[in-house]
Image 1: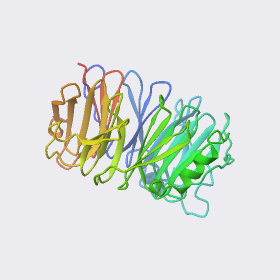
Image 2: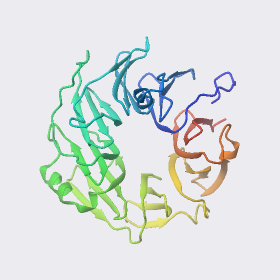
Image 3: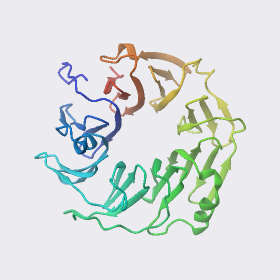
Image 4: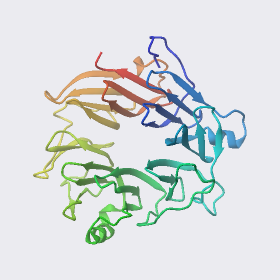
Length: 361
């Protein structure tokens, strides 16, 4: 990475799993083998790696998610379980919870915090959430339970304008965390009986229309109008495999990203779907791993390149090959991208760490 003064600093971070931000402007990078790193708002970096070759040290360096707990403390989700990290003195505390009761380990895959609720998704034992008050109790007390989540693989999470959480999983369907029971019971029944919601890959929530759009592996889309308690199953009219992401393209259209079949637009009013591969001149670019839309530009990442498309003209205006990335080798791939409002594009890779590109300058 390049620090604010222009000097280059190399960190031993490979196989990045997630990028998390907190309310103080810190960016947290979780890695598979090298612990976690914090990048403060000024670009200064600090890393935390557990020393030694013990199995516990290896599992703790397999970090999957970081969220702010309270004060100077952060929850760290690792393959060795849940940890509490104090940013001021570097102290690490192991936390006890019953998510994997009856299992040998407490491997954490995903953390999400909303108010005093901490949501934990595991590798193999599904999902639980806890009511954690400031001051922290050594053993969490399970919070209210409403809805079920039987699948161990959580694919996506959305939060609506009411603060209700919608959690999609692979082979486990859609779980609604609605403690105050604001959602119409009739809509709950529709969700429970919808067979298309069995395998969920991606979700997008539209705050203006109060609609939840859900992609499934091979069975089309589902639109949920939360306010009017309407659930609509949408047939795409043509086979589109493995839609991994759905995101707004403009006011009237959504863009669907398939790892296999490329990009498609969906008109929300007419429900007409059309391929974008030819209009964007994509050709045979290979497997698409992620997309991002920001400031009338579409960013597409494949294993070995990032494309920048101007949506006003539908032209590819830039191509960034991994061969130009410092330290990027042939066996390394780009896995995910994210656009920030300050004019930066972040790219997470498998094998070469994280890259930041200031595309406005």
